[in-house]
Length: 181
Ligand SMILES: [Zn+2]
Image (cartoon, rainbow, N blue to C red):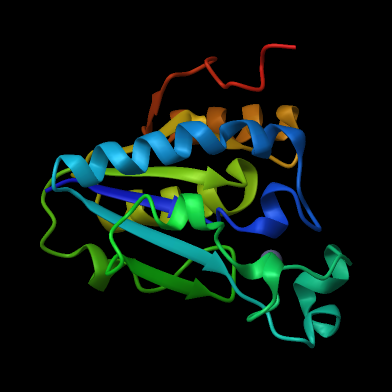
């Protein structure tokens, strides 16, 4: 079985508090990718960046003073067209930090590939891709560039280069839908 991890495809990162035009443009690719995994009987996992109302008092809030992904608010939600592309019983992980400490358990026993897509390439996608690569050095870990966007195109590219150097396979490199003017 293959596993697709859809990182933080939440309203605040698409077109909400921290949205970007690049993030908006990857949505159709993300939906298509999720549907392809479902059709093949493979596994889809979502993550959600999850903060409390005290966000501005947290360390992340000091570096990034823009409240976002407050649990229960609209910006925290995964838009229906994305969430509903997967089965209702797909695992959804609420994570309070960029990465997630539970991958060892969640992915154990899965012998095939792990593919990551979503937002933002340069923060949460790279954090989780490197964690998983380190936990499972013999597993095929890949990132689909055409289903990712960064805080900026330049930091997206920098994160992809870092992942490539760490032997994470990049799919559709240079084919990001937002690269065309
Ligand atoms: Zn956050």
